[in-house]
Structures are given as structure tokens and as C-alpha cells.
Length: 300
Image (cartoon, rainbow, N blue to C red; front, side, top):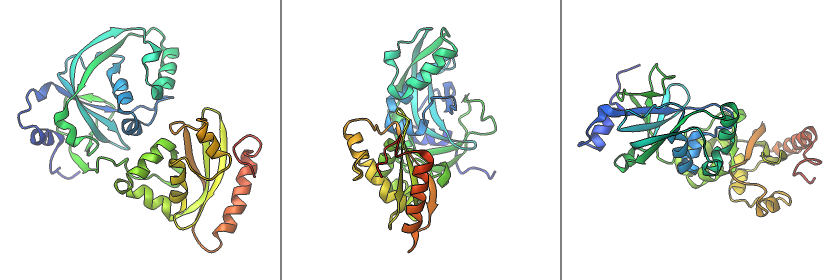
């Protein structure tokens, strides 16, 4: 890897020249693949307080010797995205957590953790966001280094590999890997210019998509065509006005909730003169295969 132009420690010194005690601050990288854990980058954008609750709850006394932490979220490979600096103001230990205090987005994760370790001792830290580093939040991507499994470290000399628009959610994945909550879709729609890869990739093609109502295990198969492909059609879902006789009433009744309803892609169809014929045939096939007329939201 070439010599970095600057490190995260260099940015800290530039943003806050009078910053003292840097050797008592840790860098932490949150990356969690356990069942029930939401996408942490998405969680930051949609419910920062929930991410901060997640961060403040630990199974070991990992922040006890710290004056503060520089918090990062894990990205693919060795990269990590800076999300904020927090002063450590103490902690308390407890083995019982009041479920009503857990943010809604984290309740599935906490229910699973409680089943696995019902009486485990936990540490709850009082972490106060440090506004001096707000200008770096959601912008700085670093190379975490070869010790990627060591999620809390004293080393801050991590190479900066990217500076992002603060409203960027990162590049759009491959079509087959897209599983997009309506809450995240709404964020992308509001911040389209900061996320051009999502707009461009989803506009380039049409095809057949699947809406999944996860709490009710109900599905809907639809098609996206025209000049704006998936992007144009899906933006109507972000606005909760699709023109569909089953989907819109479900929005109005609160049955389809943005945080628990997702869109994914079943088939990609290039735009062209014959695209509509192909889309109609594929849509019928997927409706029959997934039984979305009898057990889902499709009405035709």
C-alpha cells in the first residue's frame, strides 16, 4: 500500500489543534454480524440514538481506561467509516436490562442476546458526543489495518483512504445483493446527489422486484420499466404513494412500516422496445412461484 498522504491522527490535530490527551483515546470499529443486528451505517443515519445505545452497552470493560473514543463503523474489507467522537464519563455494571429502554431497532438483537446469556454482566457507559469533531462525521474512511479483528485499539495513525459527502451511504452493491429498507430508500431519495451510484445503477435498468413485509411475512411482486427503471418506480415507495390498490392502503393503515419493509431485485431487464413484453411474462412467473396472489399483496 502506498504511503498515505495523511492519517486520522493528522485530521484530529488539524480539526482540534488544542486537543490534549490523545494517547488516552481509543479508536473503535463496530462490525456486527449477529442475528437481529441492523445495518449499522443505516442505523446511524436513521436513528443515531439507537446506534449510541448499542455502542454504550458492552460485555467487557473495554472503555474503562479511556478518556474518550473515536467511533467507526466497519465497511467491507479493512475499511472503517468515522461516525463520531465521544467523551467517556464513567460507567455502571448490571446484569439486568429493562427491555423498555432498548430502542425499537435493536430489540430483536437484544432479545436474542438475552436468550443466549440471560444473566451476563454488562457495562453501560456514559458517552458524551464531542462536537469538536462533527465536521469529520460520516466523511472520513480509514484503512483499519491488518488487525481488523481487534475492534478497539489505541492506535490512531490509520491511513485516510477516502473523504465522503456526509450524506453518502457508500456505493450501490450488485443488483442481486440489494435488500433495501424503505427507510433507507427514503434517505437515498432525499440525498440523491450524495449517492449517485445508487441513482445511476437503479436507473440504468428495469426488471422485477420483490417487496417484503417482514413482520407479516407477506410479499408483493412488481415490475419497473420506463426511462428511470428501478429508481423511478422505487421512489414512489419512498413517498408511500405507489398507485397500487393493495400497497397504498397498507401504508395508510400503518401495516407497511419503512424500517421493516424491504425491496429487492428478482430479475434485471435492459430497457428497450421489447422490455414490456419480457417484464409482463416474468412478473406473472414470479407471482405464481411465490404465491403472492393468494398469500401476498398482489391482486391480479
